[in-house]
Length: 138
Image (tube, rainbow, N blue to C red; front, side, top):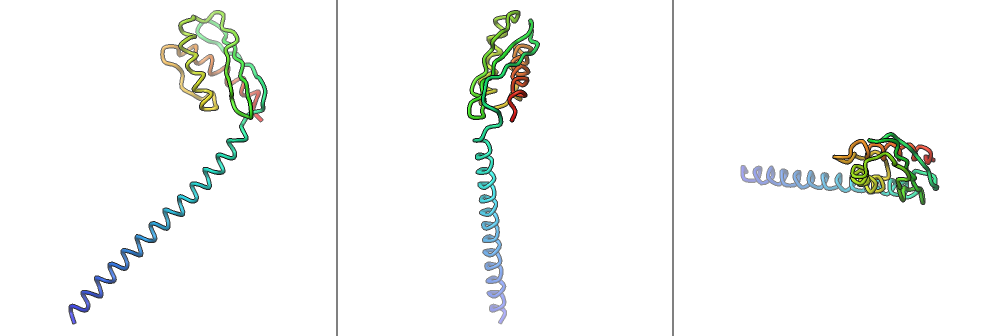
């Protein structure tokens, strides 16, 4: 009789464990579906772009003076950032600071880190780009 109860309790433990495992798997699958749905929504929103198409300009104070940029928006996204004027900027600093431009384009935002060693010049490019993007917001 005692052996019967041991087997019954063991069976109960095994069935309970399997039921709990199954519930955990179901919960994870539901979370994955929700995550995929959210990602799909975000991607469809991103594909529309956050900006109006066109070319916009901005200007900001750099290391040696004003830095002017031209930001081009195509299909609602930043396609290029060009420095149009930086007459009083030191050439070496400006060349280093231009490394911020690919970061701005890939982030689709001017909220990126500055370039170490050319902080003032890269900050000027970033701030001028922000100013231009403010004009392009839908």
